[in-house]
Amino acid sequence: MAGATIEFHFDAPADERRFLREYLPDAWDRFEASDHWETGWFWAYGQFAEFGAGPDGGFLRLVFDGAPDDLVARETDRWAAFDGLNDWRLRRYEEEEEGYDSLLAQQRDAKGEIGGELEYRLKPIVARFALDYYREFDEPVPMVGEEGPENPKGIGFWAAVHDLLVQCGFHWYDETRMCEQALRNRLKSIAAYRGADAAREEYERIRAAWDAHEDELEAWLDANPTGHASEP
Image (cartoon, rainbow, N blue to C red; front, side, top):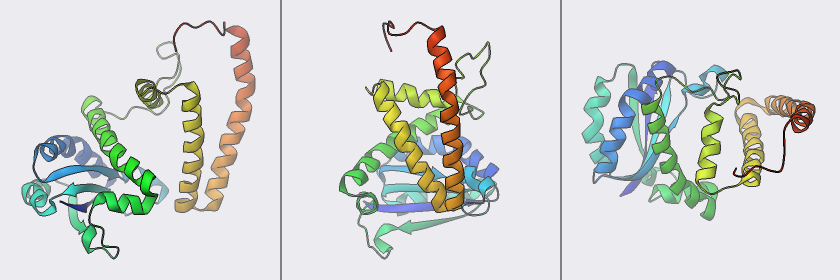
């Protein structure tokens, strides 16, 4: 088994989205049922096109440990038949300058011994969740739902992250710490891709929104019973 990435280039982000919904869920079942797949995940990039980040058109990476030649031989006809997929390229980690013998080795080098192994084990779980999401929902779920009589808590995709944390045994303060770390991480990513000023602008937006939330929180605390809930 060896580590590899297959890069898919599409005519447009819409073609990438179709690939995610029409090809990848069934393909993943084939991957995991085969002898040429050990573990892996995917990265989709089309959502960043509106910010001018990444390649033109849609772009997706399939990242895995396995037998790359066997996977390509099994799937290449399907790729050739997919309208809007204009190119793909196989990159083997063992042929890169660093000469990684596996995806795990690459992750450890990029993120440290502990961080790399955690990512290597977590990302395949997240990939399966994402594919189940594509199977379940024909249209994207809004990140934050519009609050109203039919959705009083503004349920959106954020609730899936909350539900996942609870189901995995994490409590309120774990969740708020996660949100803090995620904000720090995303601000650095914005800076890396869009520049320091963009990161500062988003930081100021977050800070202003959170400062303004104090009055809303106090009003809610005054209007609702507290300290007596029987279950989270």
